[in-house]
Length: 356
Ligand SMILES: Cc1cc2nc3c(=O)[nH]c(=O)nc-3n(C[C@H](O)[C@H](O)[C@H](O)COP(=O)(O)O)c2cc1C
Picture 1 (cartoon, protein in one colour):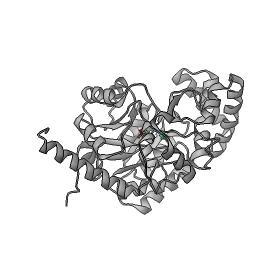
Picture 2: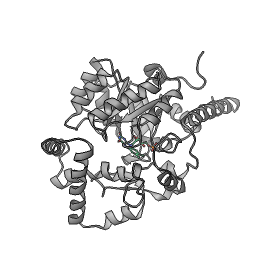
Picture 3: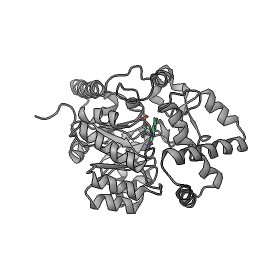
Picture 4: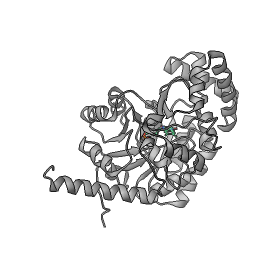
C-alpha cells in the first residue's frame, strides 16, 4: 500500500515513505533519534563527527537493530580519519552519506562506487553546482535561517536559485517545521525538506529537558548568528555566554579554544599528531590562521556542554530561527504524521481554491 502524503524524487531515491529528513546534528542525532525517525518513515541521519570511529560503528549497528528502514551518516571530509569512517559506512551498509561543511571529491567517489547515496549540504548555488558535477545523488540546501553553521541568503531566495541550477533532487533546509513549509518547499521545486531544530525538539531527542526548555522559551529574536565560537557564522540561541564570547579579547578566546582542543582530542579518540595533521589540513584547505584552527575545537566541546551535559550556562545551543515558533515536543511519529497530514490538507485547500 502506498504511504499517504507527497511522493517525490527523494522518497524514490532513498526508499523512504515521506520526503522529510532529520539532519545530522552533533551530539543530538544519535541512534535513538535516528531510528525513531526511520521507523516513522522519514530519513534519519546519524551525526558522526562527535563520535570515535568505534562509536560510529556501534551507533550504526544500534540503529540497524531498531529499524529495517534506510538511514544515513553525516561526516566531516576534513577529519584525518574520514577515510576510516567511510570504510565503516560501506562495511555496515549505510544507505546515505551526508557531509558537514565541504565534501571531498575522492570520498564521494569511494562512497558512490560502493553504492552509498551521497547527499552533501550546501549554502550557496556554486557549491550545489560543484557537488552535482562531482556526482552527488541529491543536495541539501540550507538557507540562512537554519541552525548551526549557516550562510547569509534566506531559504526563499537560495532554494529556487539552486533548483534552477542543478538537475539532481534538491532538499530544502533552514526554517522548516510543519506541513505548510513542506508544501512550500515542494512548490519551489524541492524534493523534500530537511530539519534540525524541529527534530532536536522531539521526545526521542536525548537533549536534556532543561535545554529543550530554553529552546521552547526562545522567541525568533533570541536566535542570533555569531562568528565568535569557531570563526565561522554560526546560528544559535543568544545567551549570556554568547554575549561574553563576543566581548572577550583574543587571549581569552585562544586559552578557551586550547582547553577545548585538548578535551576534543580525548572524546574523539584523536591522537596529538593526528590533531596536528587535521589542523594543518584545515588551515591549508580553508586558508585559516592557526588561531582559527584552534577555535574550530570550540564547537564540538561547547555543543556537548549543552546537548549532553545540560549546561545551558557553559554550552552553545545551536538553533535555527524556527526555535522561536516551535512550542511542543512531540514524538517523531506524531511530528511526521502530523506534517504529512497538514501537507495533504494544504494541497487540498489549494486545489479547492483553484490555486493548483
Ligand atoms: C544543535 C545543532 C547541531 C548541528 N550539528 C551539525 C553537524 O554536526 N553537522 C551538520 O552538517 N549540520 C549540523 N547542524 C545543522 C543541521 O544539520 C541543519 O542543517 C539545520 O539545523 C537546518 O536548519 P533548521 O534548524 O532551521 O531546521 C546542526 C544544527 C543544530 C541545531
